[in-house]
Amino acid sequence: MSDWTAFGRVDEDGNVYVKTAEGERVVGSWQAGSPEEGLAHFARRFADLVTEVDLAEARLNSGAADPSGSLTTIRRLRASLADAHVVGDLDGLAARLDRLAVLAEEKVGEARAARETARAEAVARKTALVEEAEKLAAESTGWKVAGDRLKEILEEWKTIRGVDKKTDGELWKRFAAARDAFTRRRGAHFAMLDAQRKQAQALKEQLVVEAESLADSTDWAPTAARLRELMAQWKAAPRASKEAEERLWERFRGAQDAFFSRRSEVFSARDAELRANLERKQALLAEAEALDVDGDPRGAQAKLREIQGQWHEVGRVPREAAAGLDRRLRAVEEKVRQAMDSAWRRTEPSANPLLAQMRDQVAEAEQRLARARSAGDARRIREAEQALETKRRFLQLAEQAS
Image (cartoon, rainbow, N blue to C red; front, side, top):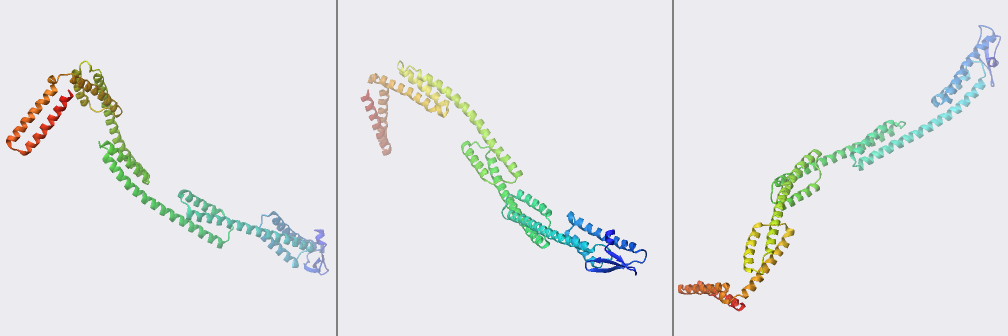
């Protein structure tokens, strides 16, 4: 305080002066006491001014305050020194305020640059979000993922600050347009998908109806083939809605299961019957192969005819066994035929019952021809002559063979 009073004086008229490098100037009048008290009074005013400068400097250095506000305060204080009613080191305080003004201007510039950088970064972030939204709107078919991402973009958008109103409005219009375009495209897609699912449902209902109509069929092979075709058509058809797909599939699969279960039961019963037939034919074949063909060819022939009758009555056997059984039976038949041929050759022609039978047939044919000629029926005559010629030729061949 004593140092600050050194920068002033009080004259004999009570005028208070402050001393500066430019000279003295009157800052007030003091009539209430001694000159020292007057100087102390105006020095306290200067102290108050210094306190304001200290606060401005502290706020500026702390970085908490807006530097442009601090610069305004500093400039105001600096301008007030010219006519400040104080006593103190105005030149020193002015120099200090000038230094603070330079510092504040630097900080204002830094803040402005930081704001511009932050604004550019914010614009860049929002532009990137807009471009991503526009790409999703134009290209994406992952509807749920894209929809969720657009929501995330909107939430991130709300956190970005520092974009000027005009630029922010333009970017928002682009984002809103992209979001609306995506919503329309997604709606069109699901509308088309819904139409396709309805068509698929109608097609699969037709397949189900046909499958159910075939469930009771006993025309096994064609029905099984048609059901396989229906299954292929089912797999090739697009899917209906989940509920309809499950309901129709249950009906379709049920119809197929019903048919193939019945077919399996029938085929199992048939296989059992074929296996039983196989066992029966194997027994007949064993009996045929055990015949004493050489010792008693006629008896063997008679027994074979009996076996052959039973063979045909037995019916079908499994396909893989049929050829082998028939081949073995034909071998027995050939063996019996050869044995009978050999026995027939050893028989006297006159005692040969076959020749006797054939001669009787020739005689009967001659009588039929005679009756036809007596009747004068040309057609009957022609047929009788042909029959007689045939029987005579067979008789001649048989007689030559014996």
